[in-house]
Amino acid sequence: MQNVYVARQPIFDQHKRIYAYELLFRDSMINLAQDIDGDAATSQVLNHCLINIGIDEICGNKKSFINFTENLLLAQTPLLLDREKIVIEILENVRPTREVIEACREMRRRGFLLALDDFVYSPEFKPLIELAAIIKFDFRLSPQEKIKASLEKLPQPGPRRLAEKIETHAEFELARELGFELFQGYFFCRPEIIKGREISTSQLNTLAIVAALNNEDFDYAEIEEMVTHDVTISYKLLRYINSPFFAKPNQISTIRQALVYLGGNELRRFMSLIAISSLAAGKPEELLSMACIRGKFCEMLGLNTKQKTRSNELFTVGLFSLLDAIMDQPMRAILNKIPLGPDQNRALTEKKGPLAAFLILIIAYEQGRWPLVAELAGRLGIEEGKIPQLYLEACRWSNSVNPD
Image (cartoon, rainbow, N blue to C red; front, top):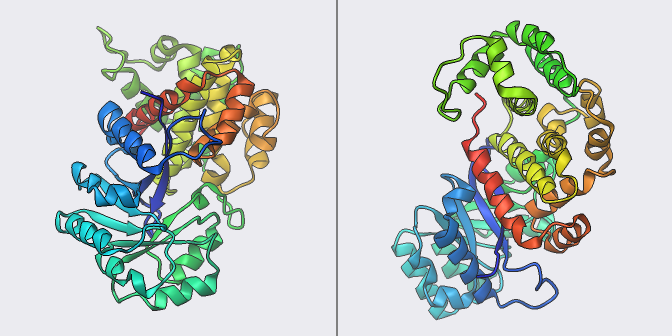
């Protein structure tokens, strides 16, 4: 079977909690310039996600929005799936024929949730509106006036309104004022610079430890003193080192033993995760999850290139790439408090330098920008067939990591 390129895009509720993910997919990087049959592509991704790996590996315990073509709806393909795990997304080019309406009615009767994609009101869609649990409006394709006009024609209370392509906090607030309940897009990755956030003493101490560990010749005694002065970090470190993950015959009871046992690379990784989770308190969970995925994805991509000796630096680049959104401050201002290496700094602040292409590839993969992914993979010398598996491994790792 060909490799299937699957990425997830988060969908939030009004409180910025994860409601579900939409699965973005491509059946092959090689066929990017060709017209790909939508039925075959969807069938292939379903086979890949449900049989080969399982949707849970990508989306955890959240529902997955999956696009279905008219032919697949008429074949009632969604009925083969778990109604508790998916939302059937009906593409905007599906015609509301009598056969389509009957097929959708049967899916609704079986307990499936239906969503109408890229909705613009038309009377002929009334039967589908009555069956839909969710209606999606594209904030990039439709003018605000057109969206308002369509909203006014929907039944009340009616289906839940989902605003997609929401890329800024201002758009999120506007959509919320218009009565939208669900939101899709990368607005949560953007910092709200206006308000800024003060960094607590504990968080500063955590960042100081990360900075000290970034020195290849760090002093264990210095790190021990810094960790010992923070009760929370000390507790998390000892709990982590004595977890079943390490399968040690004897328990470790001192900070010094824990530091030496972990060693430099694993210690840097652990403290970076602690720093991110501490700084992300009060922010959407998806920010921490995405930061962890980026860190692991970046590291594994590096291991598959000539930059394999810099995989630890790449892990940090990926993990810290959302610090501006987490802390609501410009990236440069944040990195003044964390003296990273010059290549890491440049990748994070300018998207330039030898490490930047890895981060750009990851962001392109998240957004389903497959031509750019293919171009960067070629430039970095990464075997394209490995990329989907590396992304999946990063998702699994993120789901398993709990620095708290």
